[in-house]
Image (cartoon, protein in one colour):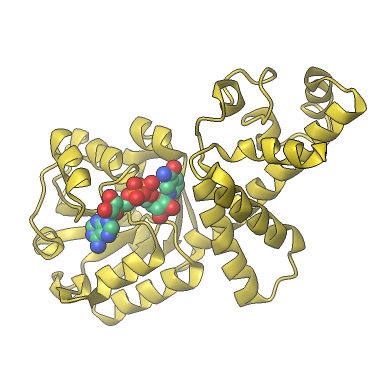
Amino acid sequence: ASGTIAFLGLGHMGAPMAVNLLKAGYTVVGYDPVPAAADAARSHGIPLAETAAEAVAGAAIVLTMLPSGRHVLDAYRGSEGQPGLLAVAAPNTLFLDCSTINVTEAQEAAEAAVAAGHRSVDAPVSGGVVGAEAATLTFMVGGEDDDVAVVRPILETMGKRVVHCGAHGLGQAAKVCNNMILGVSMIAVSEAFVLGEKLGLTHEALFDVAAHASGQCWALTTNCPVPGPVPTSPANRGYQPGFAGALMAKDLRLAVNALEHTGVAAEMGQLASRIYDSFVEHGGAGTDFSGIITTIREQSEA
Ligand code: NAD
């Protein structure tokens, strides 16, 4: 491990990811502006800087794990009197953004980094907090071959799969496409279970058929939205996440942004985004996204 990693954003995902880097022997300097996050990070043994600029000065890699693209772009370019990190970093620093953001924002961030004399890789993740803690995340990576080679061992320390998807922004593209499949398929599986209920079909019977037939998918066989067939799915613990509705709604808004940007006629993706926005508005933000079946069932009683 050579060179310091500045780790910005020590929230639900960032803190356990930073801990795994420290455990593997990397030198990490963290920063998070929210005192509660900073205190939690400190209690996990993550060394902290007072400011983002202080964390970045002297770092070889600047890893960001922030809530949104706006946060990433503001951090890179500076905002509200805060200096931009691109201006503060040593020349040729590698900016590694692991946040989930719009494809266009990732491309904009990479262009800004390159224009400032730096390097850039987008590497959003799937696997959630459980994967962050267990270092079993999947990283979807966009960037130049040489830069991806530099960050690969770092990503492999925090995850189990690293897929180089193409140029700047294409890590985000892969993430948004995958999660659009997931959002749509969870709604389809949930609708099928509720229809089965109305027709007098048991959950077990439908599962035994579909899990081994052409309806098979992750939403059914791993994250099954009804309790019983898959004992580890969130439905068995009152839809405690798992993958929270708020995060699915966020990812589908990113998908819709990409659909509109490209002009793709994806009615299912658009509809899934509206369905999950409504789920969040009606109390589903902190519920596993498979809890959408409850809404479908309720709306079916009328
Ligand atoms: P979070 O809100 O828990 O953490 C984000 C942290 O960034 C917060 O602690 C916040 O204070 C900090 N922050 C904001 N601005 C900052 C700045 N300028 N410098 C340094 N820190 C700053 O969010 P999370 O759940 O950890 O998710 C982080 C990213 O990972 C998001 O883009 C999310 O979509 C993505 N993601 C989350 C999950 C999940 O299961 N939570 C799974 C996959 C991807």
